[in-house]
Length: 396
Image 1 (cartoon, rainbow, N blue to C red):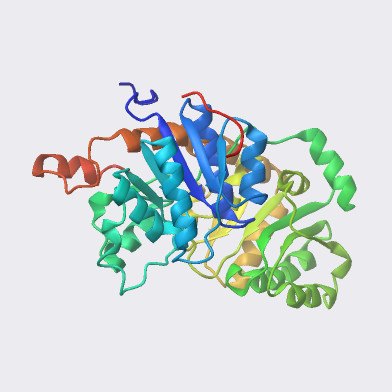
Image 2: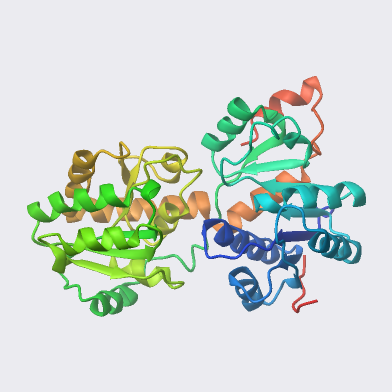
């Protein structure tokens, strides 16, 4: 079987994700489910009714949707709902992405003898559950080599149970659009000569927003053309708003709430800043921005370095270092040729490494691989360590 071909033994997939978004994990869930349907798998999904995931999958039209909602980690009714759908669908694989659903999904998978793949997006395996955790599923999928190493070395996960699969990005949706750029910059009040540094995400202390705001003071002092576009909201949004309002460059900051049409916001930017001070598992916004042709300045922490090619599609900066952030952003704000060069490289690497169709093919290969989660034989162990259908519409 060729690398991109779908294994006929894996045909029906059941995604379970009743979390309420928006968020990076929800975007990952939606993009991967749609990509697997586009690749020819029969895809069904158990989702929270009339929420972010549900609405996005309904728009695609190829995925059968079922309603459920987990009120907590132990929810007998929701667990019965999943079991009922499994009996009706008889999926070849069940796929989960949200930690509070893992144990119920494992129970259903065990009792109905359905292989279970769990995506671990964050570092939330407690020490007390770590010894049992590896036996929940046949596959554990991690979004970065960083997180894979963490669960192996810090939580004792057997490496042979894990695989790395980067976040899928819809590179036809996230792409450079010159006409949209002109429209978006007019909407936000930016002139053709302005150089816009953007931030998109949650306004939380661990996201480094205070560091970025301080660094931008230095950038704006150096460059009269520098502007910023802040997109999002969160627990420290009022603090950031006050910090920006007190700045001598207050009129050069533009604030926007989170938008589901984030591509239009990316289109108005010239550089994306991604400044977390705490370890991130991956950094989806970095990959999305690069797909849109933006150079990225990001923190050298966690899995973020895996989202770009350093000094090719972006720059990496020590987390929390205001002066280093000021210098890195100034390098790009002051050099239009470098921005264009890195933006083109970012688009190319996003298509090469993160395109949804490519990730779907790799996920299919992972599901079809012979090792079903049992400890490999001595001969198979070495190769295991190196592992980095028509659909239906409607709701049941």
